[in-house]
Image: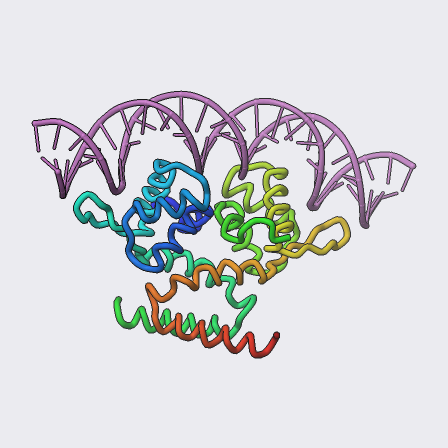
Length: 112
Length: 112
DNA sequence: CCCATGAATAAGATTTGCCTTATATAAGGA
DNA sequence: TCCTTATATAAGGCAAATCTTATTCATGGG
């Protein structure tokens, strides 16, 4: 499911915008599509293809509700992207970096 | 300098690897090139072009040292990428999110 | 000076990714 | 059952990104 790097998936403005919309809560594909269509001027299949990338790469979950597909943010791949960025965090914020290290340690203690 | 979104620049495996190398410390273009050449099997100009993207987008600084160009990580664009990810942080770690909010507040207090 | 080394640029080929149109699949209401 | 709505898939076109080879520019040693 994680064939490509999380940051490769995030390297597209349409996909980022879709995720921003989903961050506000679970939404049917159609609701996402109409916003993206307006903002980027692309077709329904184009949006559907981006939804597919997000789904197949693990950035979202989907569940059917009748004929609709409800998309929602899934955390794992975000965490992966964040972990990569963490390597550089010390360059701009020592305190946050220290905290991240501590929280990571804690996470490992909890679920090893 | 920030014509493209930070995450667009990070959406390339070669550029990410270059940044990882530079995270270990300032390095001349040649040192970066030889590693990337080995790992990805691409030419010197190809690496130079990626260095240009990183430089022009503000992910690195460069300073000449004789005939060499010393590249180093610059924090600003990383911070931007991190800020975007922060919107989603609550999905995987409430505590870190809360902390980030607090730190952001503090930063604003210090340098407005 | 001249040549070697380090790095960037130019120009063109190629590949990758994204978009479009057309079509398929699936669910629900009349 | 038929039609409409919701979404996904297929196939192909096109443009942007990336790579290659060739060349240029700059520095410094001999």
